[in-house]
Amino acid sequence: MASFGIINTAFFKLLAFRGLAVLAYQVMATVVGWHIYELTHDTLALGLVGLAEVIPYFCCALFAGYAVDHYSRRWFGIAACGLLALNAAALMLVADARLPGDPLWWIYGTVACTGLARAFLGPSYSALFALVLPREVFVKASGIGSSVINFGLVGGPALGGVLVAWAGKTVAYGVAAGLCLIAAMALLTLRVKQPPPAVAAPIFASIGEGLRFVFNNQVVLGAQSLDMFAVLFGGAVALLPAFIQDVFHYGAEGLGILRAAPAAGAVLTGLFLARHPINRHAGRWLLAAVAGFGLCMIAFALAANFWLGALFLALSGVCDGVSVVMRSTILQLATPDALRGRVSAINGIFIGSSNELGAFESGVTARWLGLVPSVLFGGAMTLIVVAATAKLAPKLRKVSLSDLY
Image (cartoon, rainbow, N blue to C red):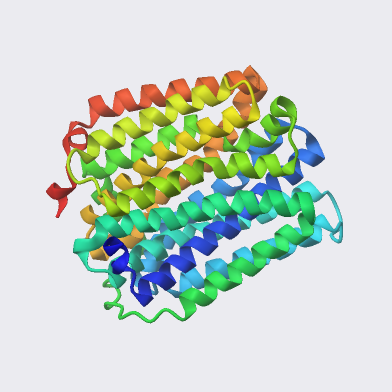
């Protein structure tokens, strides 16, 4: 257990903030997906959830990174948790039919506000990560952090599904609101010595500095682009309510299991990598993991029953766990301290927005091709992305983490 001795009080509170925020977000995302499909029985309506979130996220992410670098690494994270709590409270009112008008518009509106809040969570966590830990433990800490985040990805869908099945949507949204408030308290009580804010600069010039760093660094750009396009095409999470109801014929608890399965695999992988970090051939491991993710998506689409589908989703989580740890460690080691908020925000646009755009792509493709063919198409595109990245980013393919110290 020596590897876990790096968890000091400040790091524990930072992990609590990030893990609980992810847990709350996943509960809301799971319940919203079920809620919308219950109202519409339309895969495109599920895809529009991703579009509603990604537009404000995309518009705000770069400015969020600038704000975190130049003003406060803590308070923007606290405010983001507060906004998530308000969104969950609004969804409680929607579930109880206490708001006038079409409930779909209210749901999409709260999802848009969620995108705004999420724009600040990643930059705040990334900037504080480098303040609470020495550089020499970044690799192991990234594995632990990935496991905590993925624990939220496991627990959130499972908790959301169980709460909907046993207590109803209103209670599920209320639990999410409470988790957001606890996450805010964890960050509020975090005591860390922050360096002086970055020298004030025109906002667009400062954002441009972060963009130039990313686009001039083949390793960073290659790692971000690989995950962005793999998630954009390969993810099937947005379509799980349709798979549950139309293919596997399970209830809400089945949705929680399927949404939790990938993160369960990722949690175990993150814990393993925290004890046995990968240093050599990190780029090759990253490429292989994303290729494995694509193959698992193809296998899930062809699964004959619910539990076989859950198994392939869990295996996809193992591959994604390797990918996330490798990518996050590369970014932490390669990014200068003064640019962490902006680079994390750019990474959020690459990765975070691709989740929501991927949800929209999945909904549109499912409408055009059908449910199962759309997932097969996404898995195949992921394999093409891996091959293209290996060809176009040779520095990423050859990189080892020891090269970045």
